[in-house]
Length: 510
Image (cartoon, rainbow, N blue to C red; front, side, top):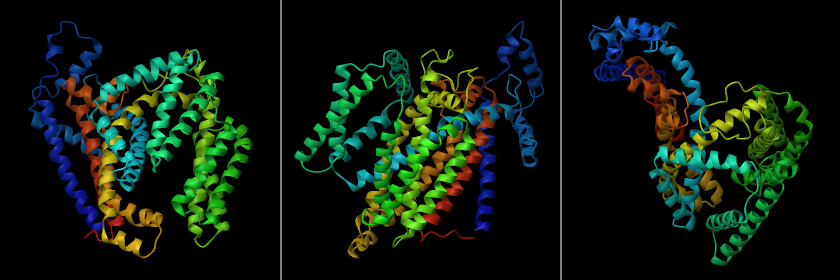
């Protein structure tokens, strides 16, 4: 294994070396970055500094300039990176230090959510092939996949920010909107639920009526101005999570696993009331500590509840506890919503259209957290809508191929339940071809989303790369390229190792 990893890293080094050489020459030969500066009669002081910096290489051929840059980049091996400076005389390492966190903040949640929901939806549609749900998801996948990213982003800014902020002034939903949303909800649930037309009709009616009643309640109480989940919603949702976790990991016939999950819900409700004073004074790492304690308690619950398979009880309890913890944290953020919205810098318009944060905003962890999340809502949704389609199609195709294999039919012939066949046999093998795609997407995530960052004014890696291209400045472009290339190489290696872990037929040869 170690020999294989070393050989891959050596090969990757030469690949990165060749790629960096080509990228540098393409940028260097695309124009003269000092032409406009030289034509100016009175350059500014900052411009003069940039000119003096670049004049060192002015008469040096681009090939030699590349090797000069490579000499500075090689110092990264000893912890003294020198990737040059931008035309604004900013060190590229400093620019990368500002851009990488912004890009990770923007793309991490979007990419992970797209992967999780895309694979889940793809698996479900594969299990219900040629159903109404399958056709509906296929149509929506191709629709979202074909939409231009900038167009989706602009629509989200118009309807998800501007019009939604206008709506918050009254927080009153008109009867027409209530009827329309109720009908849409009824159609969605009728498509999701399988069965006869009579069953779907009943589902449509029930879902439409329930949705209409909920919207009327939210409008009458002006819930959107002072949102909250409350113990009732948390309890009902927690019970649903408990049943879902039990079905996923154990099946409802394993009563001890179900009881473990339900006990976790009860403890979570007690913690909801007991931890409110603690949550008021906590921060990010405090939340992480509380989550670790909660998961440890859930492990103990599942362990002592036991059953014929103690592992199933532990998994069901821990997943339920994680869901309950997430609900409690969301509720606590909602409790700070009104304070955040009434802040003089927010001015009652909490959903922003540009930037990653409000400059000068002061507040506790919950206020600053809301500021970060509200700035991420729209760009995250735009990335998810576009990325979700590909993951859905890939996972559906992979799952369909696996479900037709001989070992799946053998598992069914042995009398295993459909849940065990899907989760323990089919799903794991369906992940094998997805491992490469997911690894490449996560590895490429550090490169930024150029269009999305540009529309929403996020100063991330994509913007840094685009600025370097526009100004014909090789140094920031090379900084982005080398960081992206290293990340892609590492995750490509991890994809190969994941292949050998998921598929016993694949072995890494030294």
